[in-house]
Amino acid sequence: MSLKLLGKQSIIYGVGHIAVRGVTFLLLPLYTNVFSLQDYGVISLAYTFLGFMGIVLNYGLDASLLKHYVPAEKSERTSILTTAYVSFFFTTLVFSLLFFQFRSQVGTLLFDDANPEIAGLVAAILFLDTLWSIHVLILRAEGKAYYFTTVNLINVIITLTLNLLFVFKFQWGIKGVLLSNMIASCIIFTTTLPIIFRRISLSKLSWIHWKKLMHFGLPFLPSGVFAMILELSDRYVLRYLTDVGTVGLYSAGYKLGMLMMLVVMGFNMAWQPYFLKKEVQDRDYITKVTTITLTGLGFLFILIILWIDTIVTFEIGSFSPIGSEYWSATQIVPLIALAYIFHAAYLLQLPGVYLLEKSFWIPWIRGVGAVSNIALNFLLIPIYGIMGAATATCISFILMAVILFMVNKRFFPVNYEWNKILIIGSTVFLIWLLQSTYEFSVIVNLLLTAAYPLSVILFRVVNYKSILLLFTKNELPQN
Image (cartoon, rainbow, N blue to C red; front, side):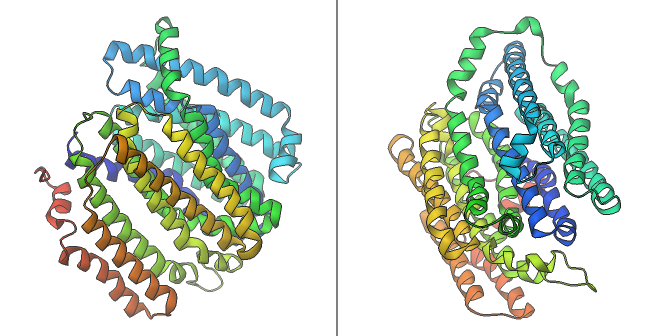
């Protein structure tokens, strides 16, 4: 895969990932104008649990499946996928059934909601989402970006339609949100199941392949758990130290800041298959991709911090994109967005860990991030509230990126373009400082928005012709 193809597939995967995760942005105006802080807090806790358990039920096998499936021959791919999918199916089924059996107790403990129907819907969503995520993982592994994006767009359309019907028209509240998700997940699971059926054969089940997959994948289980603790524990710490309403307020702000995360993860979907095909000694591509990626994310950060308040508080009659009760949540958006820029810096450094098969470093690094996040949450939330939680998240992501850099410096050194990265960081920081110090008019915000790309071009951080070539038939320059 060339750099040009990486760029194009990053855009395509980005659209698909932003679509499936971005549905929460599209629904945010509905939720924040319909639900109280308390009810939205319950919804946030439910989806926090789904995110956490989605990682646990993959137990690193998804990362290992991608790692071994991509370079394998067709005949071996059948055995690898069959073995992995059977393992996924049975472990997910057993957990979901146990969860459903004790749904009343779990609902009260985790969601502050004693309604067993709510927890039952969560169990169904967990089963369906865990399995259909493997279906689309295979599309990624085979480079079928358009197919992947189509599936995600269909999921978005169904979810949006059902939410408008169940939540807005029928006013089924929290139940309507989860029922919409469950039906959408069921449809996507059913329609993508042929992807798996055409590629597996039970006669190809292999104990040897299962052990090989688990040997590489198991270190990703604690790392995945730590990653979810890093991203999601703040909600539960907030609930413990404050109340569910504060969780609702924080979650709304976090959702807005997660626009950066959607772009980062869209890029990562193309990035992993790309670097898995590279040789260990080939590292120049990391330098080029890092500079281009950080340049793009820097511009997105500028757009977010300059325009988020204007967008959120824009009113048409009595309606605003975000309910007025949630407007104060925008204070945490810059910190959350910055956290995910450092998450991108972490992801950009993963080739060394994967290609040298040193996956044992990942749980240690993410463990440091998780522990620091919990500790900082307990330290900062009592003093600074939701800003303390956002600060804890940002610091933890920075720590992970720095630690992985130190590890790679020893085992997999890369010659980054530090002068260009310094220009990017300095420009972003200066604009952020001005924005946070003064209240500017729309005209000044437009000038500041234009200042970033102009500075990037002026200081030759990125060759703009390389960006234009993404949309032509020519190849990107390699030097």
